[in-house]
Image (cartoon, rainbow, N blue to C red; front, side, top):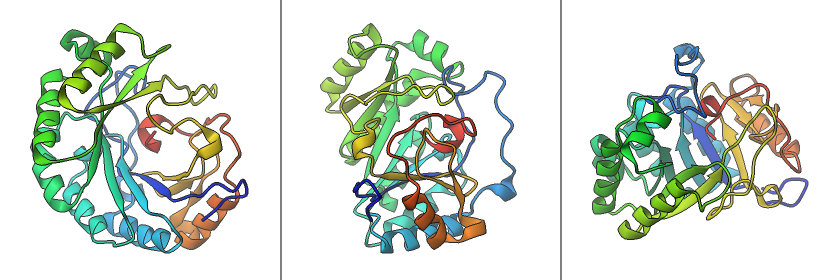
Length: 266
């Protein structure tokens, strides 16, 4: 599938929940959020049905996101179902890693190929300050187990304020190098103001080569993170939603005033 700017669109990011077990300062208010009603959230069957339509149109990469995807009950079953779709050659997940030690083995056995773990610091006190409730040791234990189980590559998503030479970013890079992980330095973003930048060590943030669509937990297919456009797969059906998202994918991101990172999937 190619959009009107001749970009090949083959990457689908799927948010399975707006819920999260952390309260990161740049993502979620301390008191939490008004959560989506369970009836509004796509069932696993609806997600798998949508993906089966999407792969017939050329999608090859699927990433599961949240909120925090590992808090969604039955997530292993979804991974197992998606892993059985032959057209998917890259099945991955972005997680905060808190529950990774608990689920890593099941995820691997279900067919998950890669993981990205959000990690902005390896200092336990700073980690607690950023996440408000998190324990860095839970994340590190999960990462080391994932490595032992053979997940590859394992990438660390490190949010930076200005650049990758910040002390916490340097420490995360040293930790990654020591353990054979890769790091993606992600400039701090602001949906309302349209603030975003190119990811160092990855392809995100470069609109000229963007190859993705995003499906929110409540079934809105978004052609761009930094745009208010979205198409309901429940109301329109998978094929029409895909067609509209592709036809209207903007050349470049601007602002998004209808969503938040925790319910779009970043």
